[in-house]
Image (tube, rainbow, N blue to C red; front, side, top):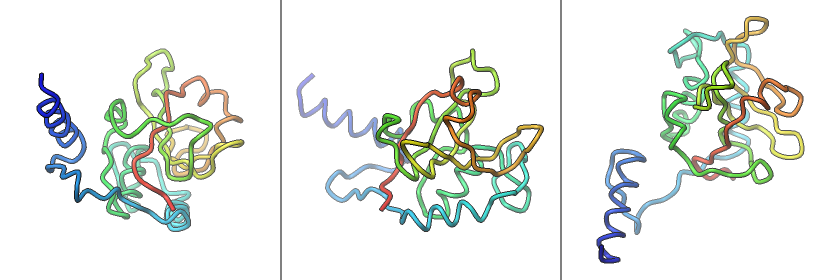
Length: 167
């Protein structure tokens, strides 16, 4: 395949995978969110109920519904289902993660290595904390967890992805 056709094909594929709208590389601007605004808005949801397949404060949130709700507030498109994070975003290392990155885990069965839970990173290294809506029977709902202090999350960890620029 000729280099020009290969580039055009790649741009079309990226466009289809990202937002469903044509991607114009000359005018595309990566979404930007203010770090403090993201943290404050996310934390306003602390204590909201866990509710499977929901994405509003009134009814509660499942994990991906919470992430969707927060980013949608800032006009950043992210998947509504945790399984879609398998091929969404730009992967970053634990050492490079920042506020606003999305941490991806398996579901409750760590042996099934596909995305099943997501959260938003509040603080990066050395002590990664994230906010998420958990179905944990002991303390369900929107809460903040520490990645390194929770062996269950370490076992279920898949990756961290960046979906926009956080300033």
